[in-house]
Length: 300
View (cartoon, rainbow, N blue to C red):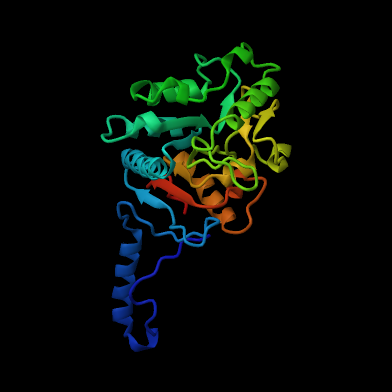
């Protein structure tokens, strides 16, 4: 899971080079390795998939937003060509702001997008804590996806947070399971196969509302789980189960800013082995893409 930097001299025998040539060569190699290339894929990290490229690193956060938009549009095109619809599930938090990169994009078949949430706080949509509400402000209020294809939590079940998680999770689980296989395919193992998950992660390494060493990490069914003791407020939420996350066709993590750098490096390192239940994001497997800015990648 470490980042390996190589240069053209790495295979040459040092015995054949004079000390002065070696010094100049090493200096050039150091300068090259310290320089950042836009869209660099310097890190070759085994992210649960033998052919996965390493993190894609961009100088600016706006370029991460553009790359996220491009990746999402490509996944949408492929899914719509294949079966006529695109199932994408998104996180809340800082990821929401990056979704703004999709605004104003041309040639997007919005009418066949189906948008879900990997987790949600059991609060009304107008509440500042609502992941759905945040996504509407950042993107969904400005693109023509039919409102019936935005799968928000049923806010009538959570006028208040206390005691709401179980009913909200059961309703969301049943609603997803009632969808046609053209909208949401189901695997042979009985798990939903989302085309793309756009995932964030917390400073503690949590994904969705699956927190470090929490009992829910080992729960395999149903698809949607209630959590009543989130260490982050509000305490009652619903979340995808870990098997549902891993069943998705593709997953994208983003890391923007220095505040994400330490944990991003930890996740990438731990996921290259077997993962760590104290860092839930490291338990994600399959086809994984990392999009990072310089600051977010500074600890790799």
